[in-house]
Length: 255
Image (cartoon, rainbow, N blue to C red; front, top):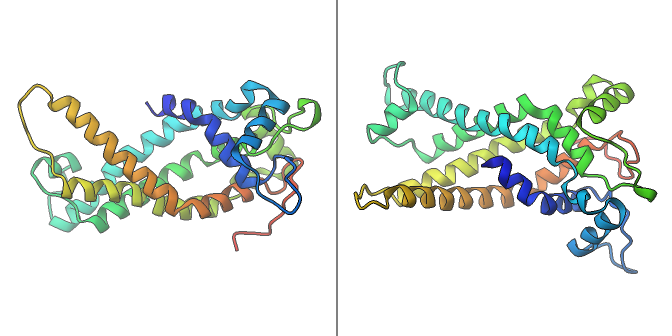
């Protein structure tokens, strides 16, 4: 599901990342530094063609499966750990056991569990995230010449030209952002579950209602987290490009 969603929204994500990094070479009107999404969309088509809208999607798909799997699996793990500490339960009880017994974690602990889950996933898959940032965050030059030509090429060129440590450029804001992002997302879902508890009704529509409920709660959590952590995400994308081929904007560090 995550892979389908990422593929469908990759064109918008490409425009967003080019807007964040400024590595699009799009000229603006005199006295204005603002580049509209439509201008970026047109520049991508002119320089890279229609497929340019999906640049970096392969890297994203390769990363999204393990990343999302780690997030959800470790979120349950951390919620179980915090639940056992909070309620003084047996170490053999999982989060599902605690949830099935009708016990709900406080919002603060839901936030922490989600935050630690996000940090775990980000740390485990970061080199792929950096590769995606470099592929997606740069627009091809004249004649469609690309600075990076795929996942493996990006990783190899980065290590050869900048050293192995370069694979973790921008990891500080990534980890700092993962805590509040996933924390806010899962914390929001936790709040909504407490405010709007699930009602067990045997009317044949319980499954569809449960799916819709998860979609609505998950969407609300994702929007809230995305808006509140967006500035940090922009810093992360800028730092990922430092030292890379053709970069025009230079920054010394997080601050």
